[in-house]
Image (cartoon, rainbow, N blue to C red):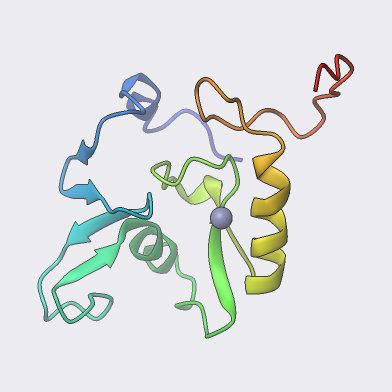
Length: 121
Ligand SMILES: [Zn+2]
């Protein structure tokens, strides 16, 4: 996993709704305004930042049935190392499992190996 560059991301507030050049859509993903001429843009001229990052890294645009997943559960963390291609079925299952691992206070994902030994309902 590449480290050491773009560490300024770590200092940025996770809660901010606006990012440089983009905004957080209602579904939690970051959208960039690229203009309607951009190949990745939707008819309104916007594209998902994770899709732009994915393609810029040399990958194909995901075919139907495949989705780009954010491994740490933070949909605004669009560093290429946080992105992963999976099938829609895998993706749904992963997010269902995530709900069980999400911190109720911060909404952040807890580590996958977190043992819930307390078990206080
Ligand atoms: Zn996902």
